[in-house]
Length: 361
Image (cartoon, rainbow, N blue to C red):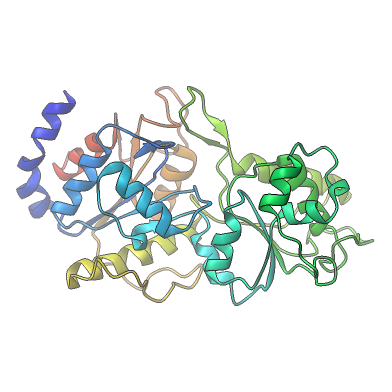
């Protein structure tokens, strides 16, 4: 059946040109195009079809931890489809807009987020593992080895003498216990200084904290869904409240399904169409970054389709933003799951979804 669909791709050419010249697509990655590092059947063919027809698309993921250039190169090699880093929006990509606002940041996530934050332009990046190197008793039950600690961490002389300006959670924590303790220390510090604790209780933390996504669940190669950054955020919020006389933590969440991220993605999609029209798709320099929270003044697209596997981020986000949505069965969603809203269509996989859209079904 799959082979027949691949052979039938060419017959869609006149259909998509006639019916969907002003259509565009946004794809989730995990559970739609890949299962961790393994391609999902039909993913390569779906993207190749859109490229052949010069229909603009971007990849919009709540994943992260690497640079957009690295993610684009990996997906290009894995799927055999040339992609530009300008087509990649990871959960933390909008953090680029925070560079002028904050100087010293606590970058939470995998060890690779240090490089990401520094490449974005943050001047003073601290990873929680640096704080553990400074004093291991800060997180006494962490299982990190001394070898890894010495290999990955940095010795920072101004760690306790210069205050933190913000906490940025780039991707999923690799050491929940240690990261939770350190994040709470910073949020409840006196003006952002390590080794201090404020005397007042408030919903407003000592420094602002940003979560790059709120996915409770995500799909990898295991047969059951795994908890994600949304669970980490919930844990931080619950403990913060208990430490602050019941005050709920004021934090900032981005990523799907937030309007902020969909606005950002819409700007990037418009910019990518301009590059397609001008033949500048090999250019690696992005246009001016869109201001966070600002919608495009106008859009050239009659319809934008969000193709995703997670109803709680991909589908409800698209629905709330006014985009169409294609829910696929290759990731988080399983038949019978309760849906927060009705998707435009439900398909077995990404290729089925693209074919259905381009055929006008």
